Image: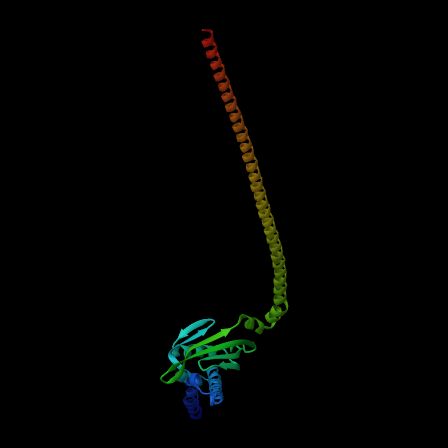
Length: 277
């Protein structure tokens, strides 16, 4: 790398990083200026980070990565700037073309970089696949300024499949349509099953409600019948009691009358005896 490029990198770090570190306490007056400076910085960093120039990549690692930075790839995970450099060296020795940065979202602490990976193996240069990918850079504040402590590359399965000509056509025109039809049929079946289940549940609630009403009505009728029978029984008891009391009273009157008659007959007999003597 030339000295001019190195000086640009150093000056960019001193100016742009100051804007990144102040992203959390900027005022409304200079918000747009700092945002533009941050985006200029992150685009500059992303283009250099994805460059296949080993010296440029080394400079970015030394200036903007922490010593214990972690690199996460769909196929591997390593820690430390030195190990990240070795992975970069192996990758560039196997692949011929650099990736292309298409878009960046940056809030001062997290950068999400959208790019297209150009897969062109050096041993098979005629083979060229373009796979959409995403790189996520996580920054943290340090005495030297914001530093990257995590670099994560994500490749979607859909992007890998679609990048392959025949497989991509089969995936778009057959696999997706078949899967869509299967899921649509399954969705219709589940909808019908849910409707049937709901109807059965509704009918079960109706039956339960009718059973409850019948039980409550029967219980009320039984209680009414019980009250009526109790009242009739009490009436019969009262009538029987009144009849018995009347008969007892009549018997007592008869006994008293007989006693009176006997008393009168005895007195007459005594009187007649005295007279004859």
